[in-house]
Length: 358
Image (cartoon, rainbow, N blue to C red; front, side, top):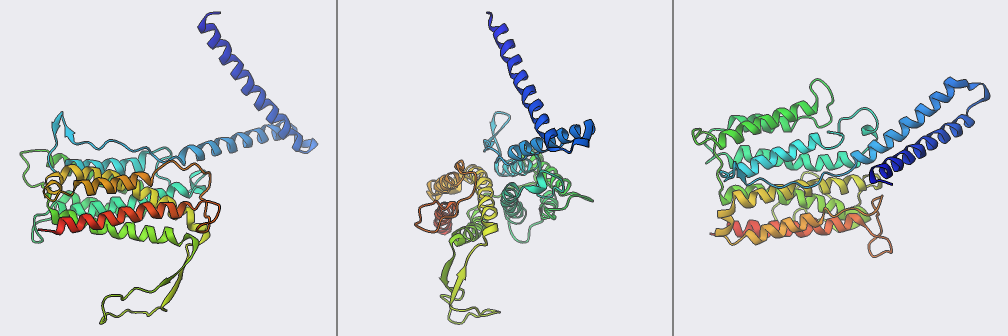
């Protein structure tokens, strides 16, 4: 038998198997219907079953996290100008947020998107990092000093990314975010144009430190919420180190902190989304701030942060987020994620100290 005939027969056998499976499903569903249901009822039952199967398949496909992409450091086979890698990476991360399988799901009002919560949490983690970097571009990276003029395209992109993340109509969230992406594309194109001297990117140590200060706080918040998955009694350190400090509403010396059980997976996937976005942004910063990092001998510190964030994105082998208690038999995925983010946060602190040295 020729190979083509063998493949044709295999395909025919597969189609016959699929047809037989659906026929058997129809007979089983028809057996569940009342005797007077008739042909219309049986057809409706089969259509309903197919609808459920398709929805489950889409839910599985849409719940997959996007793969990492390569950060572009070149333009037209030539080394890109300073700021191109950071801006282009921000554009690609934001575009992936909208164009991944299933599109942007956080504002869905129909199945299966409205029934999913892991990927919307992942989207929110990415979105927070996109917002932070867009604001850093607007306030720091594109300005030489506090009295300099704002970059108009970045001034338009920043508030657009801060639009309501769950708005689905008039205007939709996707429309506002695509407007922000177009503004970033205009800034990137002007940045790459030697004739346009108004669009600038200032790769300075103080600019990088200011953005990393925000990253440090985000990672600290996520690691604390992840660590609280098992519940902890913590000492109140709100005013530690400053005897003259005060607080609006005093809290007790011991605080019990615990993430609600129904929010464990949301916090976990939000952390994975933040790690995914930060990995790309830091790779871009490694190029755009390369001279600054080399001068401080800090490039290895940046790469260690990236390595920790990459480890936080290893494939999840369990169908659910396990929440074992401390040293119990079962794993605790939240504590594992908290460990990676805490190490990344410590490396960010070290990197900021290096950049602050003369």
